Image (cartoon, rainbow, N blue to C red):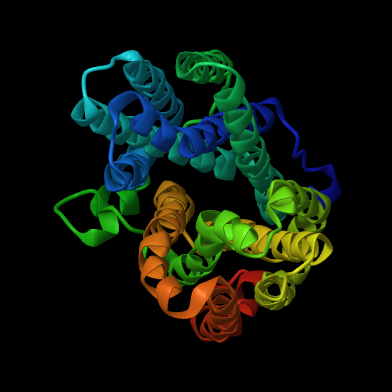
Length: 399
């Protein structure tokens, strides 16, 4: 069958992309509102509010670890449905006002449910995509993540200014129910458990929770995500420091538009030319975008940096996910997907904490200079861990 005839936009692919979009929209909508909710309704301290935000990612990581362990041994649609049902149930816990401890528990189990559901959607997408268009397909799929990260915070901030927190939680539950309904309509082909997979499931080993072949690109993903965490967590503080608050509200909108324009091309190039054809230029753009951001004293420079960073990091993340899947045997796609997202969440989760120690010493401008240099170092690390062997993937040889 020719590559041109292999269908990409199937109903199941579209449904998984929509579910992922709703999950990520809820994820980021709550990320920008839950801290203020904790302070306003529970009189939480700043550190408690930070924990309310961060414990969600801990729950997500644990959910991904557990799901990656079992999803290749069970019906993947059933895992998705269980994750979505648990997701809806734990969203309802936000309506219970019983103290900060209950809120923390609610955030943890809600994050755990996100880890299950999002790992399932990513694994199912990797399964239903044709091999020759996997990079392109994952690029399109991850656009749903991009839209969620841009629209979620926008809706969250808008609703927090004009409505109650209960209305915010009600919207989240509604979107969760819609995700479950459309998820029930999908038909996921069964994956037969081959002898190798059955043997790997016996006993205990780290390979039952982390895909070893995906570890090199996972290390790169941690480094990339740590760099992006500096933007997610501190761009507003940086903008206030430079009197660019008005433009900063559009930073992630420009970032998202840049990704939406370029990602379809980057996915296609990855499939036809190889990952290096995309990864190397995007590393350079990400690093340059951070360096440009450090110099921003005008709205134009700030937004230009947002566009360059969007092209750079936005395409690096989707390409890294595609690499994790491509280097892994088909019966371990679930673990590969889980390993990638664990690395991404780990970088985004630990990044703000680590960078928070550096900022008082060097300030925001020099922070972004340092992160730009760090990304160029990561480029060299990518060459050592994967880039010099990527041609083997194009030749269908083990990496």
